[in-house]
Image 1 (cartoon, rainbow, N blue to C red):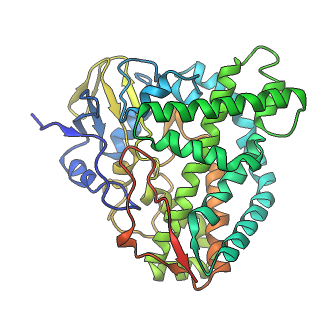
Image 2 (tube, rainbow, N blue to C red):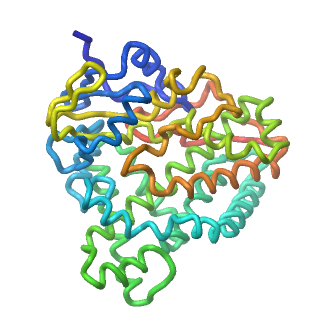
Image 3 (cartoon, helix red, strand yellow):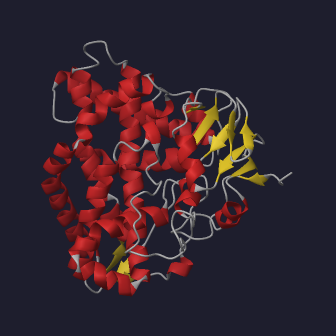
Length: 396
């Protein structure tokens, strides 16, 4: 019997998934793991099995299930808060997810493009003013998606310092208590915005739902605030980290950066390869089995937790040959960074649009951009949170 390993795996690099996945993927697609609380579960480390299980209706996303696998104590705090559709199963999941779709259609993305371009230009000016040596995170990578998600939700950007701080504490606190306090602060904040939207309607998702589905009794108020917290946090945290790590990756590969700068046609493919390689939301795919599932010669029993990290799927050589190599000409479009199945990331096209605007503009405006701190000195975050770095000093 295979020796039980711990999950999540330890990160040793700031811009790629844990190296431990490589050996696990070579050994097989499913492994028994021990979580932080001593409970056992399964981790899936190959692409084909990950896709099969992410689309299997016998795996549940219900975070209130006592058997749902938690990778840190923060997850326990989330169980006590109002739900969002990410933690629901069909048909309830689809019912509430559909309410948010109008903000993420192709038409809406086309409408947002000029605004995102202006937001990005202003961020570049902010970075320039802070320089010629400055932190890319606070001066460029974070303001862009924060402003964009405020535009989508109808959240005042003047409050960005509050919600960015609360989001960090909710996502990275070492204790359930700390994460719970931060989440309650965000819920109370969004709840106050619902009141404001009812009194004075304004553009954005919060106001639309407050004066539509909520007013008609189709959406409980705590569900509305739960959805808003999910989109607010996910909408800026993940994209900010891909902008940061994408900049780092391109600077570390100057030949590919030169082509990226010279040929706009490669930009979409570069973004997909960066999404594959960085796999920032590596630990997002947690499920619990509601029935026995036989797969790859193993039996996942009803009630067992299943972890489907996107990192090992994105580095599975059967799907992406030579996965350790960063290659902007690779066809990475089928990466698992946005998940798969009914829970595939709602905001993926918005994230792609932001990245396709933010990264080329950065290198256009700062042609001599270089790292102010060697990549080898950057510290990776803990394995139980979003991949990224808290600071990236650049100079030009």
